[in-house]
Length: 93
Image 1 (cartoon, rainbow, N blue to C red):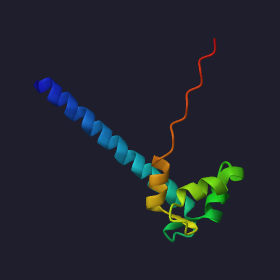
Image 2: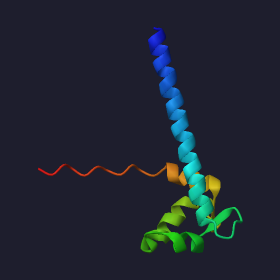
Image 3: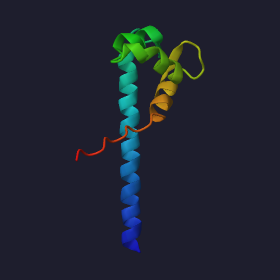
Image 4: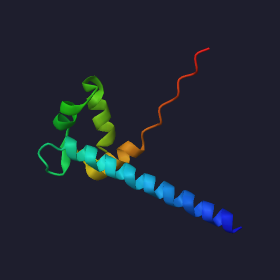
């Protein structure tokens, strides 16, 4: 029984550490996007650094949940967390 408790504790701590790292990564991404350092990312800032500018408007609109024209760190973190995982491609036969 002690082994199960220890294993559960290790798993929980590992998952918590992973979540903290993910949140830190998202905060760093946000800081890089926020060129004027006002604590919000505008559509222009987002588009300027987007790898897919043709879909930037739609992506930004989904993240900007309060529809005020800018994305806060909270919206950025929540929006990024909602992303669906990429589907794996079927193995070539």
